[in-house]
Length: 175
Image 1 (tube, rainbow, N blue to C red):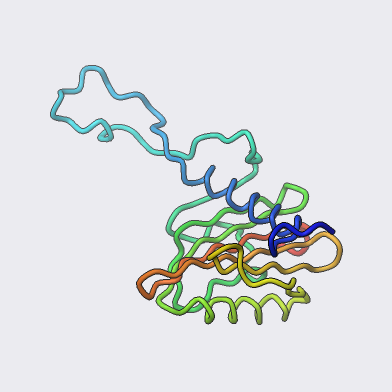
Image 2: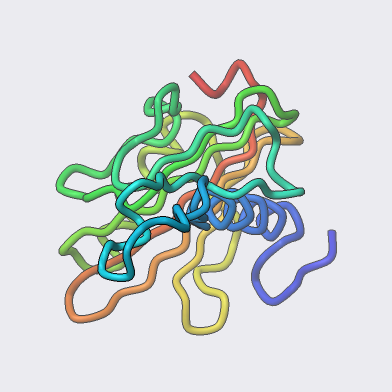
């Protein structure tokens, strides 16, 4: 298997898929045009709602939300670290493999986040892949069997660790 830095292609694919899902979920666009009869002093958002824009790479079955764990998210597979605050989450059980991604932040060191998720994933039969970082970003890949992958990336600033964890797993694993 070819190695790209310390990240193997399966991990890179998991990271790319998670990033694509999160970008699709976090790209707000107004769903209605502003009313041309509205006065200039009325905010344009007064009568509009915000929805995620369609993405050519996102499945129509993808559910995503900001600030919460999306309905149906496989919390047993990817548990939220105690004390962490959800930034966004997405889940697509209909895709093959099923994909799930979670972005959260916590007032904790990077090592604590990596340790928590390493224990949680190894307890489910995932094996850590050698490598601890991609450039200056803490990044750890996990594999289970021949086709299930999880990637954890953590960036720490001012005592707050923001982490992204993305998984590509068999649909039956995403419970």
